[in-house]
Length: 288
Image 1 (cartoon, rainbow, N blue to C red):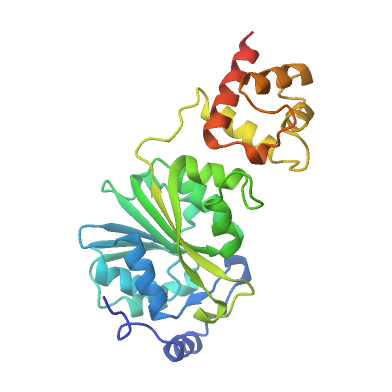
Image 2 (cartoon, rainbow, N blue to C red):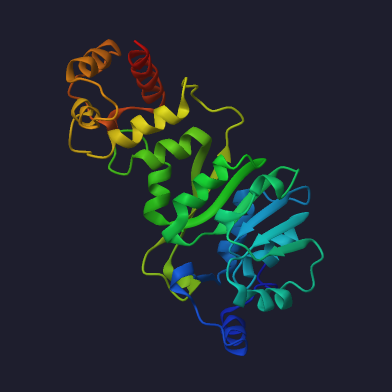
C-alpha cells in the first residue's frame, strides 16, 4: 500500500501548525512523523488489515492515523492534547471508521474500549514509553500486538538476550508478555521537530500464554527488579541487600547452587525461565 499521496507532508504539517497556532509541548514529548516510507513499514510490520480494530496512542495531527484508517477496519485514536483535537477533526474528516478520544491513555479504561481484539500502533512519547507499554499489557484489554515507535536504545533493551549490556528488567517484562522484534530504525529527520536521538519501530506480538508460569508473577518481577538494581554485584549480594526480602547469604547461595548456577553469577546472566525458577524456590523458603 502506498501512502505517499495521502501523507500530510512536511509543508502541510507546518502550515497546519501555523494555521491553528499550535505549539509543541515538551511535557507530552511531541514529535510528528512525516516520512511515508516509515508509515508503510509500520502498517506492514503491524500486519494491519480491514478485519482489524486499531488503537492508536498519540495521533498528533493525524498523519499515521490517516494511514491506519486506510488500512484497518476501525481506528480508536487517543490524544491527550486538547489543542490537537480541532486539527484531527479536520485531517480525519474524510474517514468514518475512526473515533478520537481526548484522554490520557494512562487513565483510560482500556479493557472497556473494545470487545474485539486490538492491535495497538503508536508513536510514543519517549519519556513515558515503559509505563504505557506495561500499562497496556496489564490492562486486561484484548490485545493482539503492540507496534510502537520508541527510542532506539529502548527498543534494543526490549529484545535483548541474557548477558548483554542492554538486557535488564524491561527486557524480561516485555518478553514475559510478548515476542519483540525491531522492524525499522528511524533517523531524526523523519520527524517534526527532530528528536535528539535515533528511533526504532518495534513489534510486540502478545503471547497467548506466557512462556513461563511462576507461582507468583508479581514476586518474580520483584526478584527481577532487585536483581538489576545493582548490576555490578553478584545476584546473591544484590538479593541479600533487599532487607524486605529477608534472605540470608547462605540461603541464596544454596538456592542458586541447587539450580546449577554459579554462586557468583550476576542477574544479567539469568534467562526468564531461570528467574521464574528462582522466584518459585525463594517463595518456598518464605513459606517455611
